[in-house]
Length: 334
Image (cartoon, rainbow, N blue to C red; front, side, top):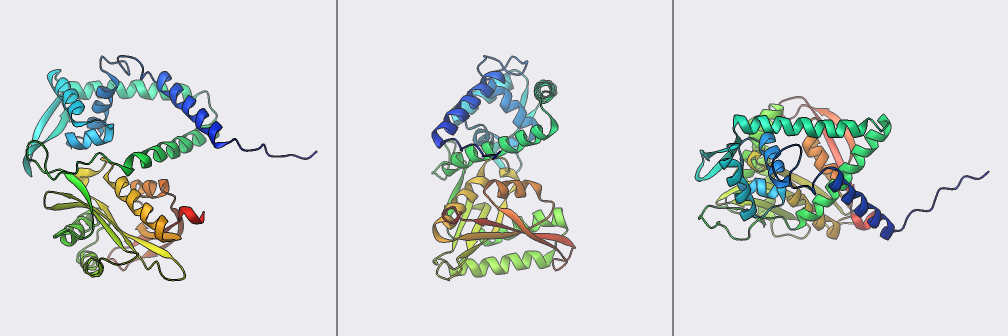
């Protein structure tokens, strides 16, 4: 007997099924209730507790980006949590107009309670699935969540103005060279890779020298630089380097870095979204080099369609590391 694969569902049917599954998840996880996760708090407040607990010292604007809330809604939630004794603020050492958010001991206890509730909720559901189905579920939900986040990142909640209502500088993504960005980007790389890989002056010099040469070539066809600036500081960057007029249209993604203060804010995804839109228009393929062990970055790259194509040991940076090459076919060539 011939075995024939079932015909794939139409895109319209897939959309309707995903919408139904999404609504069911919202209902079953309790987001329709006035309180969430065995607490006395609304869902947005519970998520604020979770994120502050995971990222102690996060700033309010970054929390708003993560939760997809506007500034006024975030301010109201934080004021309520503070009045309940669950949250405290500390003035940032580098900016007296900005404060960092921390949970109080009471807030930390609530965070642990919420965490236990959520862990039990997921654990009980997973017991109904065999291990292979569990892994498939995790992978599929990860891809779905990342796809949703990519659309949200196309228009990230970053103010267009350079200052907020209080006069404090706010982060914004800018395309092209910005005075001071070369030194800032080199410093971001130097500090991060000194901590994670033990790199020293050779690496910092190489980044600064090659980035300066690249910036000096702008504007140029097939090349682009995006930076996230706050006041007069560059806090994140990504570069697309290549020649889109050659026969083999391949681009090099370079100098992707996000300052620790912005991690979890969606800035990294917003930068990559702009870069991928650019290469999809100008190139057939994009590649990047990174180092083994940077799992957060790898997950982000893979969510945009990059796959590992090569890896090898290298010691030219002053410390032995495993270099990895990732590649991505542009949407028009898949």
